[in-house]
Length: 284
Image (cartoon, rainbow, N blue to C red):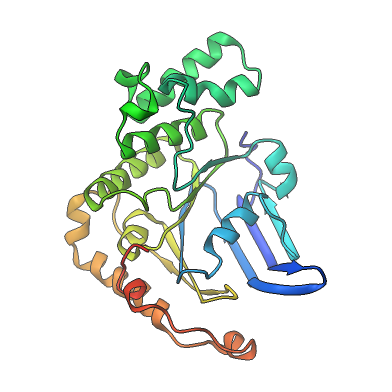
């Protein structure tokens, strides 16, 4: 639950992550990550494949521990924030239970938390109305489209009122038209709830359309290459994608991805070239 602690809702200081086998470091995934995320922001993480975006998201969510550095969420260590259920998580696959109806899937976290039956019913209905699936409560996942399944996953993640929603390429498997609709849906949900969202994507246009800020990462070991403020007017809609400022910001993110190694990168041995399709904003 969001405790409304003062200061940033997420603070990472000097975070490194290495994956080892025995005593040998096999992969250096993250290096020197310093980042603050303010309450109510929508922050996207973008970078080339293998740069550590998802690793960073999992470090924030205490799904994996950093090798070095500090992660503070809601003014407390990330492990405590996870135990106190400050996080909701949505991944690329909805991971719904096929034998449970839509409402039963959304209700599941509340059942695990032991919430009273009346409270569970009320909250489940509120969340399904929020994602505009109130007419599908008795359907099973196999009866829903991919986009609808992801809306169920979002409703489930929000059901216990977390402070932060972590989203790891949640629309990567959807077709382009459905993906754009889901972008608008998640913005509507974000604006209505005021929740802090950290969102991993490979798509430059998606990152710009959704975000308050875009965090651009280098190739592995992942470092923060740039943080770009997105000053597009809200509420955003399909007309937003046709504005000059939108195209300017897409170009700014693309150029940040293409930038050669910075001083810290060079000291660590340089950065691999970014795949051209990634730099052009393709989903990968």
